[in-house]
Length: 185
Image 1 (cartoon, rainbow, N blue to C red):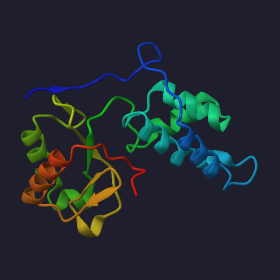
Image 2 (tube, rainbow, N blue to C red):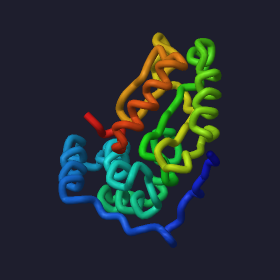
Image 3 (tube, rainbow, N blue to C red):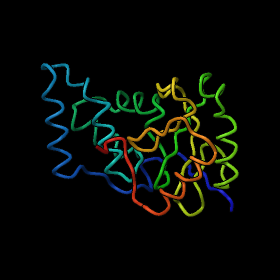
Image 4 (tube, rainbow, N blue to C red):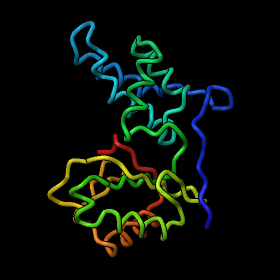
């Protein structure tokens, strides 16, 4: 199985993006929680909404829509979206497997876990499987040092991982085959 890496998108060649009415209402509700002139504090949750509505990634068009809804400069949105590993700036698989690779997780086997997942899925970190099901990412601290090694898939943490637990998770996700997002409850 070979992997594919998709390039970061530009406006040309990407589909248009518009928030659904429900998402737009949710964005406005989130922005209303902040004092006037401080609604930029809502940027991260609104980026999550845009990413969930755009098949798990933030195209330039999606980020521009966020800027428009929030009354921000486009660069203000781009700099936040490009800083955090939880935002995907290119198309991703149905499931994004964010494996923590910082020291506590590494000391408890995250390097072995990543190597196993790369072999099992036929991809390297940052790539998506040819069937479009999984994107594997090595990320910085996910804040679960006491239960290392761990990975995050959508809003779910999977902690105290072993190779067997990771294999079982992959099979469970394959059977479910529905996108997960950070906005999942």
